[in-house]
Image (tube, rainbow, N blue to C red):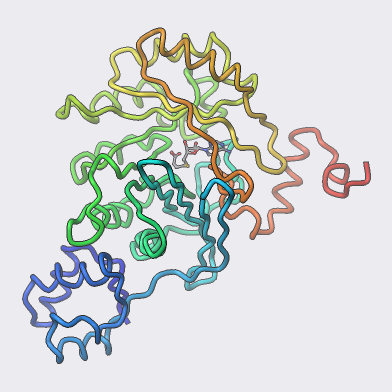
Length: 362
Ligand code: SAH
């Protein structure tokens, strides 16, 4: 059975041509699957009866299974989705006054191992297929109006390039979700060669996880920096929208208490971003069990932001949402995995005696 959920227009056209059908069937079926969310071929009335019968023999439209779901008081809706092989991923919908943002995962786990990210601490299992990526949008759209998608769930989207690009094609496609290119954002820790490739095949918005204004600190927080250091990353960011003067790269900067949040860091960041068309998103750190980091306090975040704004940088503080249901950044699916051994290692590293924290005896 071929799962048509994961085929973009081009792949569907090829699929229909191999069936001896006209390529415009691709648009029709995209609309049935994604716009109308119909899974039963028998209901697809603008296809011939023979084609409908043929499709039900060889194809299916199968989204991931909803394992659990939760909605927090602020309306944030989190799904744990189970994939055919038993792996779990998460998607989070965040409603705001004028938009609805869906945070989508691209991999099961992640290889990058950023020190402040709980996904990184779970190791890497595999890339998601295109249907598993777009399936998250399909499921969210059953209940919500999704106006924005951010590839900011689990995983590094640029290390699953082809599947992520195909899924984003479907998000942008007028016959499917019809989202604007400015409302679909890919977030990367800075896989430079893939950033260069992305701008040639897709015109989605780009966010870069900066988190530190110098290599020494960034090497620790985002180990990928050792391979692709700041000087090259900044050059790649300058390059990214060079043909589109009105577009900006979003720089993500997680606020870690006492680590990267002092005025000195802010001034260093201003210097680093000189000449880069960018805006800065300050993300209050979302703590997770056994992390050594703490969230910067509000006054520190405000001061940091004011220093940036004083230098003419457009900086905003991202609101924390969904805390109560562990739907915040970097916390996805932590609970459903056995991370005991890893946790113990973290505790050792942090100099914490594990039974004190875990056993509650202290
Ligand atoms: N691999 C991609 C997507 C990661 S998740 C990337 O690195 O950009 C999206 C954002 O959440 C990234 O900026 C990531 O660094 C940040 N993040 C991860 N864990 C976090 C945490 N515990 N608190 C706040 N932000 C976190």
